[in-house]
Length: 275
Image 1: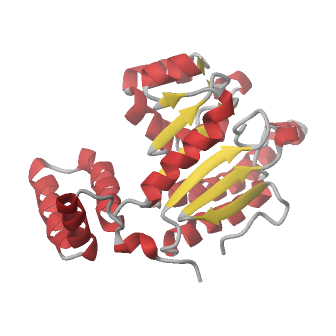
Image 2: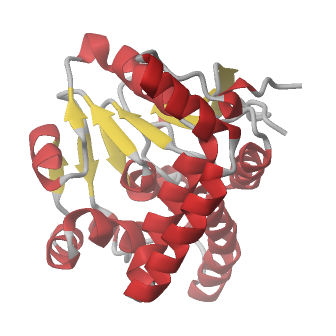
């Protein structure tokens, strides 16, 4: 079900095809409690199943995007004996894995609006996003090793795709902090804008993507994601199948007519309304 968290640790709002997901614990760095992770996972599954959701915009309330996991809660862990501590994390991490898999499986655009630091598991959202925009306060903190941990939450899957394997190793092994200007240069951010227009610019892009022809944009995303593991022949086969599917879609007719008539297209697939 698409609704805000029971504990209000995140809030959701659906408007014009854009599901705005706001992390809502600014007093705790917008960290998501482990107990809330299953509900957030269910949200992404519900969004995947709902044709009214054509784009997800992820942001944080206050001055921080997200610290990811609740590191402050780790203090309780160090009071446990080693076996208990390891058993505790062995139970938590599969829940986090299901969330990462649900986000990665979402086949429509994801936009990340980054104000302030993103750290730990919070890094996954801007790294996996199809479009990431931030203001000058955006900061990407690869600090797992600062508390003696290896990376988690899918960061080692998506970071090399964004910055390259060699740069990813350096960022992770040095516990690097990447500011907005560096993030733009590395490709972590697609744009850096003034703080007072960040929210508007992010929503403008999200709505633009939500107005795109749905079959075409979903195929573009899924085929590009799969390309690295496919041969050229498999890629060309997928492209052929995609075009054949698209030309049978009403969006194709509308797109061609709009092009000839020199007007904006109003794609039928974007006219789905929520129940």
